[in-house]
Image 1 (cartoon, one colour):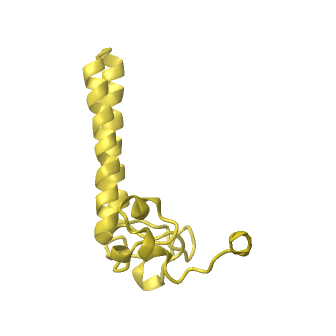
Image 2 (cartoon, rainbow, N blue to C red):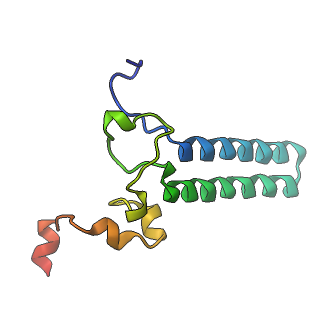
Length: 117
């Protein structure tokens, strides 16, 4: 048992990779601020943008995780999410990739929305 108890902290390959790239980008941008170099600062911003893109692509490839808790056998950060290709409910990244229809299948319609139809 970890210090956080018996919970899934959501560590994934996509999360670790994106965070590592973003930290490097913030370091480069910070160096650009110290050097008073707009070019180096812009390069750091580009690396930060690259981190977001890499994280998104890895999430879509199944190396991320859906929202909410996962079963205990999937808590290891190196476990691939086999449901990613259908899309995750309420996932902005999946919607941006055009996986919204697959993610919405079988989801109940809230009463407030159903009443307006």
